[in-house]
Image (cartoon, rainbow, N blue to C red; front, side, top):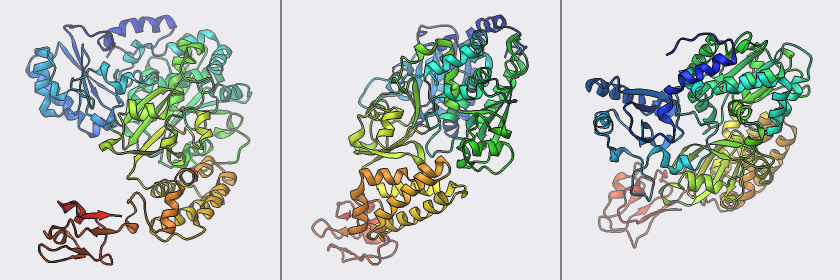
Amino acid sequence: MRELKKLTSVEELNKLKEEASSLVSLRHYDRKENEEKHQILICGGTGCSSSGCGAVKNALQASIDAHGLHDKVDIVVTGCHGFCEVGPLVIFYPGGLFYVRVTPEDCEELIQTTVIEGKAVERLQFKAEGQESSLTYHDVSFYNLQKRIVLNNCGRIDPENIFEFIARGGYQGIAKAISMGRQATLDEVLKSGIRGRGGAGFPTGLKWKFMASEPAEPKYMLCNADEGDPGAFMDRSILEGDPNAVIEGMLIGAWATGATEGYVYVRAEYPLAIKRLGIALAQAEALGLIGDNILGSDFSFHLKIKQGAGAFVCGEETALMRSIEGKRGMPRVCPPFPAKQGLWEKPTVLNNVETLATIGYIINVGADEYRKDGTEKSPGTKIFAVTGKVNNTGLVEVPMGVTMRHIIFDICNGIKDGKQFKAVQIGGPSGACLPASLLDNVVDYDSLSAAGAMMGSGGLVVVDEDTCMVDLARFFLTFTQAESCGKCTPCREGSKRMLEILERICAGNGKDGDIETLERLAQTMRTSSLCALGQTAPNPVLSTLRFFRSEYEAHINEKRCPAGACSSLMQYSIDPAKCKGCTACARVCPVGAISGKVKEAHVIDTAKCIKCGSCMEKCKFGAISRS
């Protein structure tokens, strides 16, 4: 790595950018011709790390050394590429050969064939469903159907090397902002129309404007990286793959609002994100991009990392601030709002990771260019973490205004195992379940709100025909009920009572009036809870009642789960016309609930049956069914 020497002017930053450009020159999309130098990019995000990318790196390096290629091949460990379904991911440049599910045993062949012979190892290349030919990184629809702005560097740079970020235009945004002046910077963010990507969608520029007008000092700039939604990992991946983009966004925000101190509040369960953010912060400080008189100006800003203990409620801004202060993370009544009285009772602005990582781009290209993507009221792009019953899970960045169908069926290649799409849970545990009839609705803040849902942080959990919607609502309410801080009665007691009713219904003990009671409790929580956790916790219940009410009624009135997912309501039976009397089912039953003679039809004693499903799996003749 080059020497970390303090930059005292914009001219020095620009010179450093030119010097560093060679670090990433081979990774440009248009550089596919053969070159003497090779670069191997290995996904080093949390997902690929858990799949063994460290062992793959070591094996590749050992092969490179064995062939004497250490001067011709560089290995670069990047952040998350976003295509978590097929990791560990390895990309060879030049050419962008895209290898998936790579193991250490594959590495010698990769070096020999790809580097030495200049050929592709086809068996390791990604092949999309329905396509015979292997694809390069640039041709994979999961990537080329996206519009990657915030994720543009993730998976393409070494996140632990600040020079690679600078080579791709990093910190040009703060340099331009300083030259523009504070008011012009603030006006540009206002003009861009960017709305907070953490959940509520409040205009970022307006929030900044409120704090900028406050005379009290000091002012604080905070980043909310307390990503707690089940299935959401956008913020983690940005911090792991491009931490300097977040730091630059905070710098621009601090410059525009007059903040002099800042904190990144990140959950302690994100050790890799914390490590890489810490490295980025140390390097930025060494270059003088954090500290006093940044780039030779009169602007000073100091930044620290604060680790949270994993309380979901600390995603709420006032609870987060109390946690930074060393107090128990519990929301407080607003107003006064944080822009006037926040951290340590001083003016404070809080934005989430994705919002801040977008700011540098907005300042660099300008508000008008930024607004070319998205819709009039929801400009720009949004990252979604798509999980569940889809063929391609991972991070998807698309312009606001695309349809849910485009995300799920075009980019993520549809539903697994040929099953039917049933619903998508959007907005995290406090979001809503949207049915197939809304697949062609556009995805933006206002359209989702009209459908009874919300953008949230961007988690998308896709479910298929085998999912019970009552049980799904119970699952999400279990999470929010456990994460309630208990400060206000509507949330503390209401979530508990709602969960008890859902558990009874799933167990087959639902009764008349349960649906009406759920709706009454939900409305009480929405209108009288102190913070957004309690106000939105009933959303999964209300949305499933709205779109899948018949499933609740079947559970209560017929003691039947239409999806066949609630074990307490399952009934296994044997069709005597199909049963061959092979005894395989009886032999596998753990409680002896199946009886019958050899070569004669068997029967199941439903009083003994524990509904484990072993008999159904074992039967070769399709004689056993579940209802």
